[in-house]
Image (cartoon, rainbow, N blue to C red; front, top):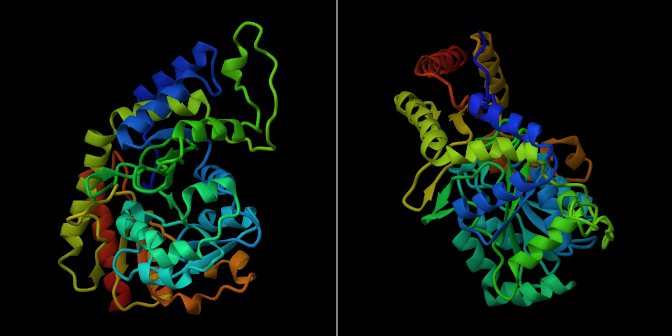
Length: 405
């Protein structure tokens, strides 16, 4: 049997909660979605939370709320999934790609500093693999006098903030920590993903984690985004069930981005056991991989705990020293031939046709390319047994040494 890469944890607790929702007669956005939002806020320590149907929708509606438009620039790492940059393109703005660190895959602060112009409205760091970026340093950068002087506000929200917005693509990092604070409370706004392969899943889904500074009213922004993710309609289905409350208005031309109670049902179960069960289990798998591969000179191990940072243990990004992209692909094929599924996170954006055709060149991002061409993502999921982990380890070691021989 093939060991899968990242199946979701669907057990009887999840099934029972979903069945309860189905029997309740309320399957779209309703009481369970609102409870999920409250519990996420309590877990992460941010100021307000809106559950949505994907990380992608979450990122885009935040960009649009902040007024990002044609002529604007948003800084992103070249090493990320396409959704991070696609939402910028959807808004008519320009993704300004920068290289990443050689050790931890995070966006390079010096490259970010060099990329800032008077068109920059947002910086979007990515917590790749679940390891939080250096958020304090990012905030120090956007708060410096010369960077703030460069900032050109075009909307009320931009004027109120008075600087570049830090919008974290936290798709991988729920449960991660930075200086004792949870992901979701580290940036001005963070957006999680609850896709099927994520640590915490709702099948599809995501959450906008608001943590805006004064003078913003995060509850007021939450209410606006609730409207904006329901086509701009000022009442959701639950509100319209009240006696005589059928009439509604559409205030803006918004999006369809709401989470449903069916999705939230899964999330409520997953969140209730996340900290002490799911994260602990995933860390044990990480530790087993690290213990095994640390004995080999060819292995470059992912950083997942430092004095200030703790990962969510989402993707174990193993790199093999000194190999080419072609050798990496050969290693992956040999691992698959041994009935183990692995993956690559990610192809840097300039390698993809949609961005190549816009003029981005991988040669401008040498660290991103070097990380990518040597990276192999290993299975990490709840239920992956010690015997399976040993099978993965043996398959990787054997395949690497066959190619390096």
